[in-house]
Length: 314
Image (cartoon, rainbow, N blue to C red; front, side, top):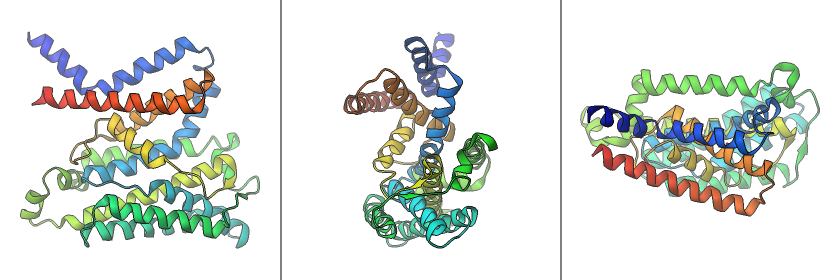
């Protein structure tokens, strides 16, 4: 019986990884194009941005909040970087840092409303979502901005080893360390699981809540830059619906929308599960609209699995 219990516990604790491995094997079996260097490389290039957005969303969700502005902040990152390069002649690396600063300001604005003015995260980020998208449309005049070769697309070039991929992995490692080995990570989780206890211990939770919205915005801005680097175009329309995919990745990875529960590695796997689903359906020439239906059903199944897992833990 004890062995059965341990096996059941193992399956429950690692269901996200098991789902990913099973899905990966299924994809390999149903398409001979899936398990190729070119396809797997493209998945990583395409998902570098969404994974960063999901990491930022996880930080917010751990505090019991939500950030609906991530897609619009991606558009600001893409658009502002392109405008700074083309209209102001700023080199691409400084342009990225200026865009990151601007995106972080938007996250600070959201975080201030939530942490100090007691706005609900849904409402505050919804307002900033609208503002950020408006900024992106305004600075680009709602027109895609083409960039010169050898500038921003260096980040996605084969010649330099596809830099956005190692940058993504480096950030994942950093956030795993923050989550598991730092007091900051523990206090972020505690701010979502037992905020009153944290307050009674004399810790000001506002600064931690503010910080996660800043982190989310910074990562979303960088994700927008990554998308622009892949296409070599700054565009005010990118990131539409990205907030939903980021939330889905967190939920599939076992994060609780009530806060206090989540994992960096499982969130990354959750994002990759969504990527595999989209990729294999594209390889099989499944139309875009049915893909949404299938993705929605998988999200429902993931949430049900997490609910069952929580009941088993109780």
